[in-house]
Image (cartoon, rainbow, N blue to C red):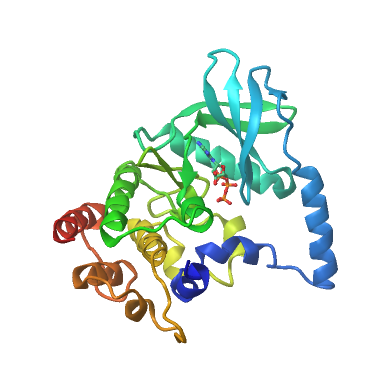
Amino acid sequence: MAPIQHEVQPLIRIQVQKREQSSQAGVGGNVELRRGWQRWIGLWTDRPGRQGTIVGNRYVIQELLGMGSYGLTYRCTDIQTGGEVALKEAKPSKGKLAVRLLHREADVLRHLQHPAIPELLHTFTVRRRYYMVTEVVRGQTLEQLIFEQEQQYTERECVELALQLLAPVAHVHSRGYIHGDVRIPNVILREGQVHLIDFGLARRLGEPLLPELKRRIKDVLEPEDEQATPDQDLQDIGHFLLFLLYSSYEPQKGHEPASWQEELQLTPALLELLERLLGLRPPYEGGAEELQCELERLRLLL
Ligand SMILES: Nc1ncnc2c1ncn2[C@@H]1O[C@H](COP(=O)(O)OP(=O)(O)OP(=O)(O)O)[C@@H](O)[C@H]1O
């Protein structure tokens, strides 16, 4: 498969790299030594709970679903209902910021109700650790599908997936928030249906980025990203589409890296849509609704 990361990277707004860069910000002195030390402490303090461990007298850990920058998420059995849930814990090594983000995530999810967004079921604190319980989405993230399963998507399938993703994103906007982190690792596909997860960076429309996060990513933050606007999620859908489209790109022999426009050779209407999403042409003033109409129109052409 094509080296997607490399090809798309120059265009991807810095979100993909935010996490790595954030750990470097403000580090002085012997950077390597300090980083190594922090990594070691992180590995120890963030070691996942074992299978069979009961959390909060109610949730039995079955497996670790994933460890992100600020949280550990487990698939658990709820002893009270017998059902499966996702249990997310703030990453201990990330201290108060991770706990704050998890509280914010639960607060946002409380305001959302959409079939493509996991429902918030419960929050609790045990031994000063905060936990959030949501519906579990059994499936694979688009990141896993593209990079591990080497799944390839046609233009039409990409448009279909973007349309599906737009539904929960539009719902988030209609409730007065932006998701703020619409990326392939935060989109799960289950039985062909898209689900949007990870609301840790969600913000109220117009709300500036948390000062703690701003400090960590000050080198890479674009000024227009500071105040939350729906455009940021739409731009992220543009990057999401690029990742999907590159999944079926095969470089020619002796190929020199070129722009994504040259490499992907897209249907003109799709090219225009992407350029508008990525800020290379006038944006969609009508937000998610206008984008939805455009994608539906495009689907008929492909
Ligand atoms: N409700 C869920 N159902 C199924 N899997 C989930 C769910 N929530 C999270 N996961 C899995 O756990 C991983 C980490 O969860 P999440 O993205 O919420 O953590 P995070 O620390 O906020 O990550 P990030 O670094 O991407 O911000 C996800 O990539 C996904 O694989």
